[in-house]
Image (cartoon, rainbow, N blue to C red; front, side, top):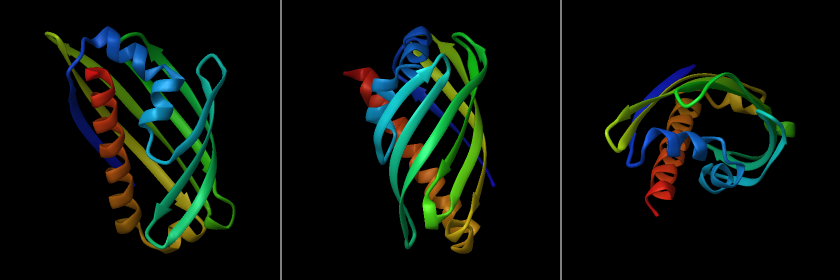
Length: 146
């Protein structure tokens, strides 16, 4: 399934770029993130607790940044394993466009799920994925205004 979105972040592009690459900022903004650790340049490991419909699980997730073009864009890819709940994997192309003292952040993501997550239906999973993305960007924008 594919999702996309656009958000106006009330901060200059360079500041948004730095925050998008800061593990502490990301850990505070990612819904359900219990822990996020940078393991190498452009690589992270995360532990996340999620509830999607009737399925609740803890996911161990590997995240990688590629196609990095500071401060304009990158691709973020991840694969999370949730034991009996199944797995989720996906990637998102993220672009930042300067607009005065604000930044327009756009993303296009492709997601796949398996196991129990796939059994609950793509409409429910897609709706949850959009909500998680919206929650993340709302928290992220708030983080940059404080």
